[in-house]
Amino acid sequence: MAARSRKDGSGDEGRALPADLDLETLYGATGGPGTVGEVDAEDAEEEELILVPPVRLAAPEALAESALASPLLAQAIGLARWVGEGKPVDEWGELPEEQAAAAVKALELESEDIGEIERAWALAVDLELVVLESAADGNPEKADTPERGVAGPQLERLASGDVEAILDDWLTSASIIAATAVEAALDDVEAARDAADAADEEDEEDDEDEEHEEDGEDGENEEDSADSEDDEVLAEVAAGAEGTEEEDESEEEYSRLEEARDEAQGLLDDALQVLYETRALAPTRTEQTLPLGVLAALLVVPEGEDPTEELLGEITDTMVILDPMLQDLADLGMLDYRPIDPALFEEEDESTFGEGGEGGELELDDADVDRFGHVRLTDLGVFGVRQWLLEDGIDAPLIGEHAQGDAEALLRGICESPNVLPEEEILEWIAGREPLPAASELLAAARGDDLVAPVRRLYCQVALRHLGTPAEPAAREALTDPELAGIAGAWLTERGVTDFPTPGRDVVLWTTVDALAAQLIDTGGEEEPMLELIRMLPGPDGSERFFEEMWRVDHTYTRAVLEAVGALHPDKSVAKQARKAAFKAKSAGR
Picture 1 (cartoon, helix red, strand yellow):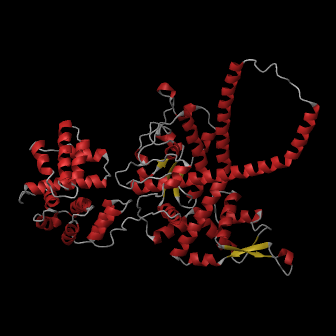
Picture 2 (cartoon, helix red, strand yellow; picture 1 turned 90 degrees about the vertical axis):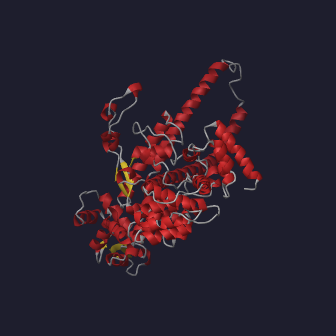
Picture 3 (spheres, one colour; picture 1 turned 120 degrees about the vertical axis):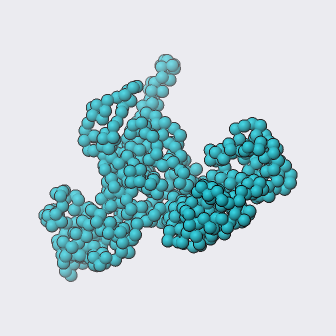
């Protein structure tokens, strides 16, 4: 995959999903958290880190089975078997028309389109499922001229069920098809660009016409002829410049072609990454499936903006460009894709898609939206996109990477990784473990006064919730530990347990600081998550006593928490007292 044109540092499960966006119509998409916005080239170079959420891969055997069942690879393998010991080919190594027609019948393809066989044949040759043999016969001039195609050695490897060989060949196929799809999209990209350029030129011409009208006839008295000698000089210069102009035009055309190729590749990369992230974060198949218009809007509409008339045109252009590229990848099993209904390109009557609502806006029902196409990344697609990300040097973690060691490694990994789904890692870790020993191990790993210890305790409590009743003895034992008594008591209370000692005032205050510190670290100081806890302060004892005690709490984050309360608390008097307490904590060296 090419370098991304967008970057998002969020990997948490609370992040908004593309599928969560409320779209009034197919095009009524606005940018939001975690969506795709345009990034200037200079900004893209400055940003060094691309974060993608962890994914769960299907078993290699299941992936290999899906790869062999993908229509295009299955056709390529079928062609290689049909070729057997040899079929004639033309001088370019392609099947003659009569042989291609025979292959269609042999493979029992529903479509009689020879182009489908030609594509499968090209892939079979690229994968060495089919090997081309020359017609040399002692004639050096024909040494490189193919005469027939025969089944290649790679066919036997795939037939043997070698999972690694199957997935390697599928990945190679995916790269070939993606590159071919990008090349095929160049005309659409250039057409969209030409349309945009024409619109810009029209606007400029309108501006120039207005300026000329204001200028009047100031230039009418200027000379309207040139000296004959000057004409001859100009003619000579023009003649000499023709060759240079042709070279310049050739270079300009090459440059435009390269720009179009980069644009098409970047568009496909960005689309696949959006689908990858949606697949990672959305819990259901329905939520993992995006209407093509939504996908295009996420790629076009800048974050936080509503689509303008110009952007709506770009969304449509993007859909048209993506449609055949996504279809090609779907043929390789990478996507579940319903393409744009071809009839839409022939229909001009807007009533076909629903009558206009208030203000002339077009209202689309589910059936109408479905005609514009929808797409979802398959298990095979997740595997393929992840491999491309890794090849680009991008960290693309798997769920469970932090769940392979002990509880200390689990909590440390969750706290230190920039792109992790904590609850998924916890569930992976506790699966198959005895609840009571697991709870004891987690509580022991949650102790400490280092900078991330509050977050360890936060996720220890999350893990206890998943372990359930069998973990209760470990939680009761932790009530005697000042660092753990708060989370242990809170967990027991959540479960309706009442027969345990009420924690002392000092434990309550320390746990309050610890809980706020965990949120402060885990959310990066984001206002909304912190406000939910801060609004509950100072509690029933009044703010004066609360903050007078709180600044004395011996905790690594006492001052930071008080400063956050002072900055965010909606009650100005409470906020003022928190700021005073923070100053006292600072003076005391906390």
